[in-house]
Image (cartoon, rainbow, N blue to C red; front, side, top):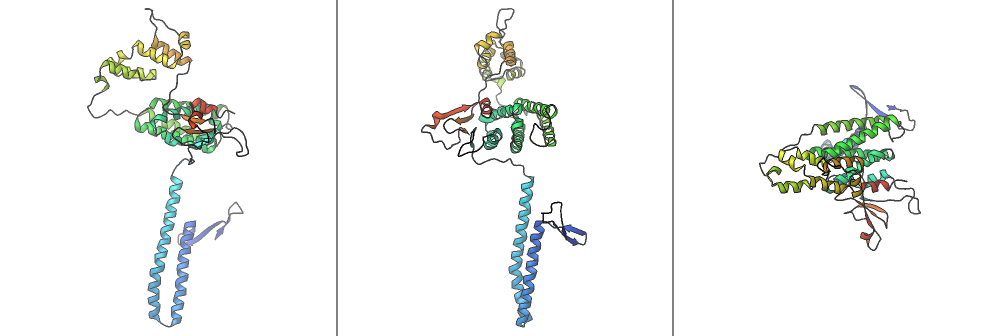
Length: 376
């Protein structure tokens, strides 16, 4: 029984009357019914042919051979239909972000004979392999910084697909932190920045700023709050092996390890572990090197703080400087831009460069430079 829907161009729905009532047939059921009907029709034709030949024994022999051949085909048909239903179910339930095969993108800001339009931030975000980059320790902090910059000012410029990939990558970043129990604080700050940006865009600036339904963004904000709760409840597991710890090392080695920390908050947290580490974390030379690493001499001279004994308070100066100036950013690996062919790529990705010396045309991009490429 056909049932016409609201769209007059649709073929409608097929219903079959059963003992329990009317049941709507799906495409897979139609395929199965076609197989059964074909089998019955072929069997009836075979029966009439054998009876015409004049022998019931001939009919039984032909019937047995016919059943062996056609039931095998029928079972294969059912098996194929079952595989198709299973594949469709997996495709509907699996959440896989869409990525291109190429790990580079041509950045063009105007129309040419070969290319029309311009490259957007969302397109670049989809084409570059950020999903694999978060698994690399050298690229992790770079990608996190990019996500933070996009959350601050570039959310309205993302398309629907770019938004989906952004949230999927963010979810994988949170899951990686929960599994590895590392880089907890930067991800907390990223989620907090993203949540505050969404609150201002949704409530203050109106619904038309962000691409997509407002309910979708509300659901994403709920996911962000859930991720923040998971990060707040994380508990660092202590190693079970009774090997050498940081406290067992000589004081000179402990101080050498502290000099490798680039964030003063990490240095303060490390000093709260044991009293001995607390004494080492107050070393004036340690904080002096930290200030000189992140800030220029001119910035330091503007924020000088002297103690009663006439010594410079490098620790207090550091926390005062980070409130006034941005800290120096260093990354093990960044995105690169080819000035000859205008292609954005990762360093280990071979892009189709036509220059005689491609290395001389390659420029390393900071996260701010990456965002600046798409400021039109």
